[in-house]
Amino acid sequence: MTETVGRRGRRARNKATHELSTGIRQLPRKQLANPFPPIAPLSEEQIEHIHESSMQVLEEQGVEVLGDMALDVFRKAGANVDSGGIVRMDRGLVMEAISTAPSEITVMSRNPARPIHAGGNSINFGLVSGPPNVHDCIRGRRPGNLDDYKKVISLGQFFNVIHFIGTQGVATTDLPPNTRHLDTTLINITLCDKPYFAIGIGGGRIRDAAHMTGIAQGISMDELKSRPSLLTNININSPRKFDDSMAYAGMQMAMLGQPVVVTPFTLMGAMTPATMAGALVQQNAEALLGLSLLQLTAPGAPVVYGAFTTNVDMRSGSPAFGTPENAFANMASGQLARRYRLPYRSSACNASNANDCQATWETEMALWGSVMGYANFIYHSAGWLEGGLLTSFEKIVTDCEMLQHMSRLLEAVPINDMEIGLEAMDQVGPGGHFFGSPHTLERYKDAFYEPFLSDWQNSESWQGSGSKDATMRATEIWQQILQEFEPPPLDPAILEELEAFVRQRKAQIGREEPALEPIGY
Image (cartoon, rainbow, N blue to C red):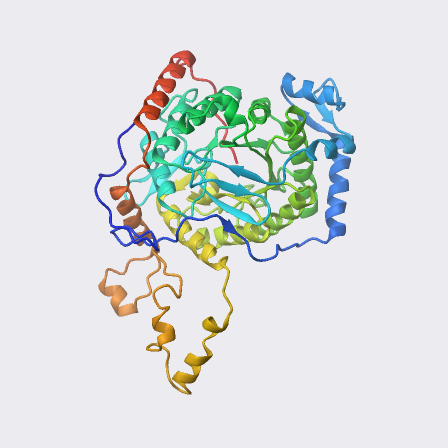
């Protein structure tokens, strides 16, 4: 578990750009903030109509909730729970419950310099999460496995523009399902020092991840409760069904004081009505019920309003992503999250089977909708293909280039006399050029964003260097990264304690394999 992914060695870094000796240029790591006003595609009257209709769903139709513990919490709070487990909540109870949730969250990591903030105009990009398969252009498509999981997390650690690690960068299908969470959490901690998500299925996995997070940070479980450091994502099974294992995982996290993202999985035309209005109402009702459960369990627990609304291909039933409807839903869901004064999670997904133009435009559409919808956590920002069935090494690289473009766009632009350069304009005069101007020479090194993946050579030079397209260049880049990758420092005593915990828990859990785990969106 302590071995590195690539060879160890000295690396030359440019402090301004965080450039490896191989020439992979990066923007410095920082907390992003959106300087632009959010796009509000719906009017205030429309948002209130969605809210009122959502309350009507919760009061009259309700949501089926599985699990005695969750049902008991709802009963004690005064919700109506019938014999079939359908929970109906009065709107006053819903609004009172979610009013206790904080509007902003700071999530710590084992590296004190890498906390992330969620709420307001903050933005955090996350690595792909959940696919059962993995692909690269050297070894092809294959089931997810432990070795590839290490590589995916290493890439997530390397790129500064990735702020957090999702639930699973790729499923480790070669490990027993009942203990793989121990291995993946250990990898998250040893190969990465950014915040990460725990598998939100059942309380045992949550408690294990919380114990390991506390060990990694050198704090007790009691101290962890006042120091949010672990996240999880739970889904409502649309339409209107709340799984007991995810409900219990969320409740366990809430009692531990750790942030929970509640995300209905709503596909228009399949899991919701085939209209934007119907999908948003159902999504909102489902999310509010899940968020209410967590606040009723532990008032004031950090929670996040999650949205995963898109449409299906009405000819095949397959999910579609990066569509106009998906981008619109990402923006409109942000309006709903702001309506309830909650942090917001969205996604930047695509349905392409290859790292091609389709993958790029669909990801960009979803990303724009998320950014301009003021999403604080943008899940699946790098590496997602095949509608969530595949993690792609090349797609991680191309997405990180796109995320860096977006990050640079979000930077504030100074407007002052020195920047305007009227004196330089006068010196150059009509018909001249600014290449040799002192104003340009003072700024040319950092004047514009420099990509690490784009190729700006002319056609002759490009052909002379091998006619490599973006995917071919991405293949070279991820290999270079992994070849030089070194894990972030970790106290050997902490590593020893973590490994001992994993051995102990594996012995306790045993090797009896339960049913396959669902993918969390």
